[in-house]
Length: 143
Image (cartoon, rainbow, N blue to C red; front, side, top):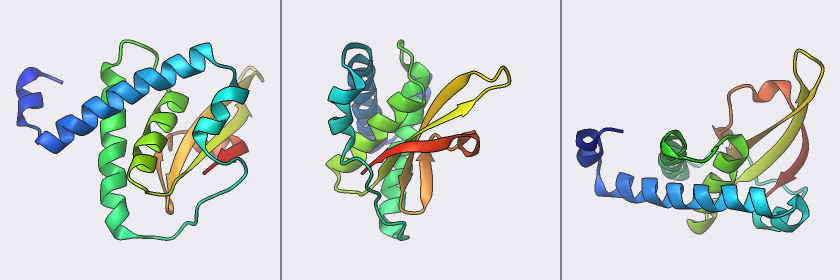
């Protein structure tokens, strides 16, 4: 994001960007230094899902959070892939009392190697990790 483009964004967008950037770093450090068993409680209650109700008022907030998370991931100097993005968006939504469910899935690539993916659902929409999620089978979910 160029300086002029950054200055043209609203104050709210800038605040969301920096919140996402900070939480993205925290998520990345958590993944690097903690075993999954320890940080899975940070994701929420395991094997529970939030309802897929469509509530328009929360979608606007969820979309703006998803946009901030994707933007902060582009400018992060650490690897900010699907799990980092999903954890970051989940924490931001939780802070605003917006229900969401994070899914962890596995699949196989062209070489038949096991690969993983994470995505986040808010209501009936996937706000983070939508790309390619259909080739993964959910093995754990947290709300």
